Image 1 (cartoon, rainbow, N blue to C red):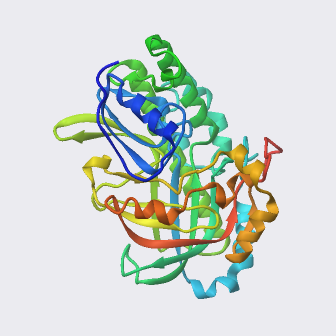
Image 2: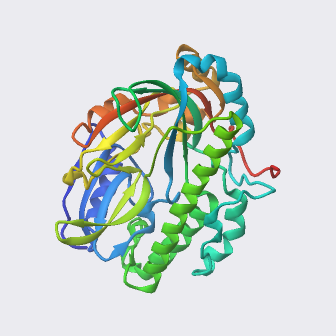
Length: 392
């Protein structure tokens, strides 16, 4: 290992284990600079909420297992005062036009131009094409969601007049294909760097100028377009069901690596659970199912590598949440806030997350808030969902 590169921490009372993971990442010989966001918690290799710039390399587990996990928000041409009038059809749209769960797929695959791209440049990617096609337009489990809510636009912006609108928000990524690609190339990176040993081998990298790194980066970018297609299909289906079209959309990755510059030096910036926040760049930072999310505009802070938090961030593990809380606790908080939950696991209870208002307050120098989104009708994977029958 070499001398530790520098990184800046945003946030207060962060998990010491997440800080320790970031310390390890900064000791890699390829590391140039880093940042830790206020929603940070422990991940594989790089902590979730970690931002890492490296030279001539790409680290699969610094991108994340769910490659190109991302957000998309569509604003409907309906003022929020009409929400109650349309609530039933919104629920029908979520129940019939979206699918959640591990291994969930369609019997009749959805069509999208992403499936016409080259999937044969890697034997691993090629082997996943059929699976990817069947899962196109679905979401996974965990913290992935689809929800309708109230968007409050503070002033005229994003091409809209200030006011309260109904909006549709989704969170999902590249499904099983992205996970398989992450596992394959991370295992390859570990074999190429046996000197790292455990647990540092989760930070193993691929040389971006060699075949392995070139191949992974190409696969990652394909998964980025695939994840974008997932959201596009879900939004088209849900909005089409209710007979509306979006009047504004905002979307962004938050598990990805970008070729950028620090001064004149070209680097690979990994944002694992971090939102791109370059000057003027719009993004979406969600809260929990019972707490607000935000449309933000980046301030281009160089110390954060032009990044911001990707959500509230967990304050307790899934297993701890399931031991401490039950569905009565969940229903109590949702009823108080007038939120309808179609399905979710107890591990996604809002109390398992940090206070999103505190997270936003701790990153005032990274983004400006453009609009506030409050969930009203939420769908996530049902508890214990495993692979089941295919949907038509």
